[in-house]
Each structure stands twice: as C-alpha cells, then as structure tokens.
Image (cartoon, rainbow, N blue to C red):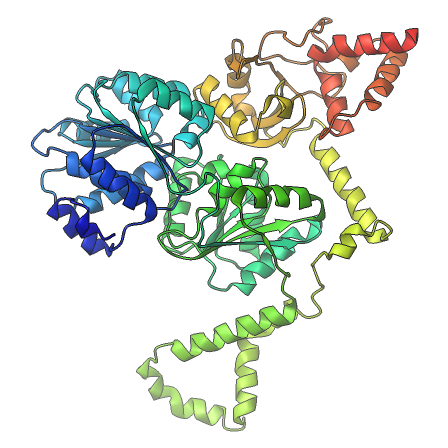
Length: 627
C-alpha cells in the first residue's frame, strides 16, 4: 500500500513525498486506515523502529482543526530524547499544514519557553509525564479540550515509574477522547491502563510480541569473560563502517569501556545516568551527526534514542531481563535497513542464549572472533578504497615534479609497500601474533583444562568481590527485600526508585538481583532520598523494605518499616556481637541450604548486615543445637 491511497490530506502527502516515503510499513498499513476511518480507541503492539511515529502521527495531524488555537492532542513518551524526536518528526509531517503548531515539553530544560509556546496557541503537545504534570499544576497546560491521547512506548513509561503520573494526566482529559496506546510489550500495568482509560479498544499486533525483526541478523561470539574487550575491538575493526551502540549493564562499566575505546583511537563516547543534561545533549548531538561512531550506553540512558541508520547493536553484557534484548536489538534494522545484533557471550551463558532464541523465535548465529590476518585484510582494502575514491586536489600538481624526483628510486611494488606501511604499521604491529579468542565447544566441556579452571576461579572471585557489600567510591549500596522469587527485575527496581522518590534523575549504578532480595547502588548524594521514600512502599502486593548495605559488625540504617520478622538489638546488625558459636552454627545451617542464583558472599552480606533476617537465623541455630 502507498501513502496516496490512505486518504490523508494533500498537504500531509506532499510533506511525505519530500521525506521520500512511498510504501507503508506493516504497522502503518494496519493503523493509519483504521484511525482515519474510526473514532474508537486503539492498542497497537509493535517493536521499536517499525514506523510507529508516522502510524499515529499522520492520523493525529489529519484530525487537527488548525483554526482552534488550543491543545487538541497530547502525545506522552518516556524520555526527553524521544519527545524531541517525535516533535521533530511531527513538524516534518506538518511542513505544508499552515497554522499548525507543535510544542515539546520535557524536563531538564527551562520551563519558561515551553509555557510561552503553549500560551501562543499550540494544537499538539508532545511531552514527558513529569513535565506535563508540572505544567498542569501551574495552570499552563489545560487538557479539557483534548480529543486524542497517544501513549507511546507505554511499557517503557511504566518501567520507569510513571504509573501514577499517567493516571494523573489521563484523569485530566475528557472521557470522550480517543486514546492510542503503542507498546512493544503488554505487561499487567499496560493492561490496567487500557482497561481503566480505554473502551472497546481495537488491538492491532503486526508481529508476535518480543519477536525479533526479520531484517536483523542475530550473531554471538563465545569468548572467555576476561577477553570481552579484546573481542569488542576486533568486532569493531572487522566492521570499519560501524555506526552503533554498545550496551553495558552498569554506569561504571559503560564509562570504562568508552574510555578504553577512546584511548585506543576509536570515535566513541559514553552516555549514562550520571551525565548532566548538557553533557548528554552534547554526546547525543555528536552521535547523531556521526562524529561519534560507537556510543557506549546503559539501557536506561539509551531509552528514546531513535536513529534509523544504526548498523550494529553490541551486547557487551546480556541484560538481566531477556525482553530488554529485543528492545536493544530493535534499535538497528530500522526504516527498511538491515542491521546486526551482536552478543559477546562467555561459556556460562549458554542457557541464557537458548532462552533468547526461544523468545525471538530466531537462531543466534555463532560467529568466530576474527584473527589478526582477517582484520588486517579488511582494513587494508578499506584504506585502498579510500585512496581510490578520494577526490584529487589539482593543487598537488604544482608539487608533482619534486615528489616524482624524491620517489624516482622506487619501483611500483616498493612504492605501494612504503605507502601502505606508512599508513598501516601500527595496525599491523598490534595484530601481529594475535591469539585466538574463540572458546570452542570442546573447551567449554573440558573440566580438566587448567587454564579454564583458573579462569572460572578468577571469575567467581570477581563476582564475590562485586557482592561483598562495598559500594563504588561516592556511592551507597542498598538492600531491598525483593528478588527473583517476587519477579523483581532490574528495570522494575529502577521504576520503583523513580516512582517512590519522585525523582527520575537519581543515577542508579550496579544492580544485583538475587533470589529473595536485591542490592543496588546510587550516588551518596541521594542516600537520604532513598531512605525517606520507602516507608509505605508496596510493589506487586509486597511491602518494601530498603536498608543501607553494611559490612558485618556495622550499624544498619533502614529505609522502611521492620517487615522482615526479625528483632532489632540496639540498631545493630546480626553479626555485630553475640555468641560466636551460634553464628558459626547458623552459618553452617545456611550453607547446607544454598538458594539458586545466590552466592555465599551475598548470603553472608544479607545475614550479617540486615536485622530483618536475624530472627530466622537465630531460630535455625537453636534448632541445630537441639538436634
């Protein structure tokens, strides 16, 4: 189907022609005709990068009465970057629609110009929930005449803790409006919004939920954990025209990987939660103009990045939540382009790879990390192509006699060798005798291999060190009584922090999701905010308890009610004193009942630092003495 057959206004179609759009994407082909011909609500399920903005944006523009200088449509989205991108796209669609005004409202920028723009008479508002509520409270944004509400990336907004904000905003809108809900997934909270604020909604699903896009290839490389950065470098060198995002799990790792790439001469930079808005805008501006070719990012920081030309997405670490892999990979292969999603995996992640394959209904292709000769061949040919395609500057002719005289003693072959060596010696030296980084299937299974055993011991030691209760400098480590058994995942925890602190600028660092509890780090500047926000917190019917994680023998500071069933002794943690024999007995009792996914060091941290578990372990020790 082509756009001229949709029934959109001539001015909109003219703008679409200027943009080079011809045929509709699957989601557009389903949504646009339906919205133009119906006044009912709509739930549309599709992955990112499938043309959703045009799917809802073009019908919204078609319905606007430009003579009425007041908000008639509001589009809500999770991040500033996505807000600006949607507003920019909408303005390009409305290029020839005279009298139509679009205003983007978002946090991290002065509210005064946004208020002025609203007062001047705007018909479409694109905004993030927090800033929209601020403008409503200031009486600067009135939603009584809204005819269309669009919730874009509704699942992401809920994951980021905007549940109450969305309820507040939707309650301000008329009951007779049309509501369009666009989401990649359909969790319970999205279903709740659809039931509470939508009626007789039609559901359009252009592909199975969480299924990977057909034009994205999914590759994985199997290496030792210690060789991940080396593998990343080789992948980048094997793809000299790479323009992509490298996803890391934590802010610390993101900054570390980006620093290494920059030191090694790559056009790279990092984006994470601790950057100021000005720093973030600067990095994103350079990335959009391709002055940065490799952006290293956390999942939270990358939300809202909407660039169609990305060639690669590289998972330096796999996410805790398999669904996030789909969101990551969906950032490449957009607008009809082909893309590649890469996983740098290690030998213990085989089961997780199988789960991802099952979810995306696609095979992950095992690729071999290229050796030095393969990379040098690719890079040399790229250099030759660059020379051949370089436009000749005819001013050089003035210097040719002197140059030819200087090179007269060299024949053609020698001249080429000198030329290539001058440009390429450093690269050739780096990959000379480069080791094989691939981990073969036999190596994975060979438990007698001494080097493999040493690596596994080192990795276990590293993981124990990460969970020993000591936060990164300048950060505070917290305990929360929710873990995998309560279906807590990293994005849920971030959303919970955002929701109860009502501050979405708190930078969350390392997160460890355990079986029955979890740990997370935030900047110590926000320690009081965390402790004071969870006194009455509830998540999925579970009361929430948050404490500062302390090393054994130190005081434990609580951020919620005493809900663990234990008894407090003068505010001190369990290991701070008492019968040492009893502690050893209870420790042996615990070691006899190892829970899945929890390291012994993490159990020691939880029992030694958190008084909420004291009663349980005292009782266990008592039972052992009796027996």
